[in-house]
Amino acid sequence: MFSYSFSRKLVEDYNFDGIDIDWEYPGYADHMGTPADKENYSLLLHDIRQELDALGEANGRSYGLTAALPCSTSNINNIEVETVAEYLTEFNLMTYGRSFVSMNLLQDLPCHCRRITHSCI
Image 1 (spheres, rainbow, N blue to C red):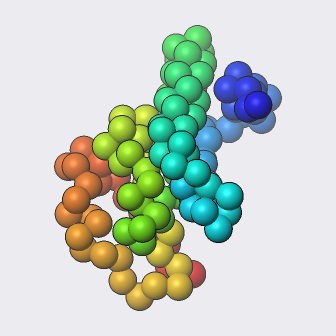
Image 2 (cartoon, rainbow, N blue to C red):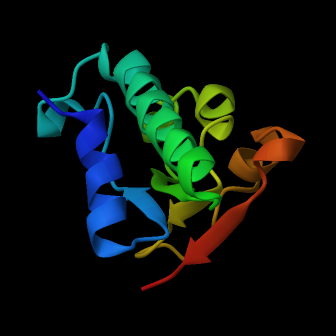
């Protein structure tokens, strides 16, 4: 079981400015994902955000929580985008191997969720 206080300890011990989550991909059956991953991903980010906020209150700093999110509709539909947007300071869209990002995906993100970086590798 993951310890959320461990994420806080990593930030404290190594003077990190935040945590980045790269889960490829919640609910993706080929990687042993299950439908429960959709809610579990939101819960994971929520609990890490709480730990980072508590640490920030204790030492007067602000900590980022970022995540790599998929661009394909089949994978992004397994993420509660509006919910995780409340916890993330930035989205990083995994666009490597693609020459475009679905404009529908970008338009479907709520306005407050448009903190996006785009990586093409």
